[in-house]
Amino acid sequence: MKAVYVLIAWFTFTTDHTTDGLEEVRLNYARAVENKELCREMIERFEKKTKNAIEQAYLGGFQAIWAKHAFNPLKKLESFNNGRQAIEAAVQKEPFDVEVRCIRLSVQNNAPSILGYTGNIKEDRDFINANRAKITSPALQRMADKLIYE
Image (cartoon, rainbow, N blue to C red; front, top):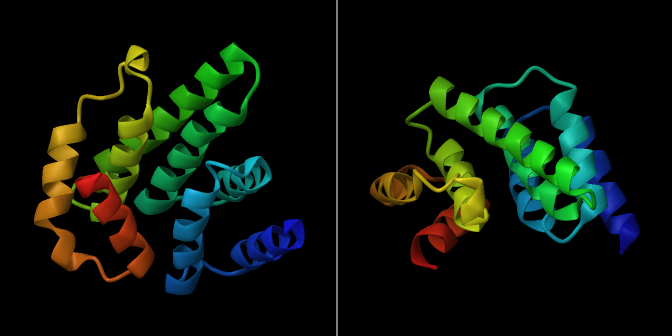
């Protein structure tokens, strides 16, 4: 099974950020919650390259997920806060991008309320719902549906 993740990571790292590469990132985003190594690899990938808003949002999302994998409470908080900052910067760059909003909503839905990162849940849910027809990616459509309906 680990070999599959290595192949996925290799494919993801060696492709440009084309539609196919982005689709793989979308799939890896969901997998990273349970796969520490994949999460680390995705963070490293996005830290190394210049980021458009979507890439920056995914970096932030993976960093927020990393907080789940980190052992040290200070490292957890640091990783989460770095992720939060990257996501908010992405929203500032592209406030009307459905994918960026999906990433922010996914993090806010799963963040402990004590962290105070829950202020855009209704706004993002409404925005995503209103713009669902613009989503062409099957993986992103599944993410949006899960965020809106669960």
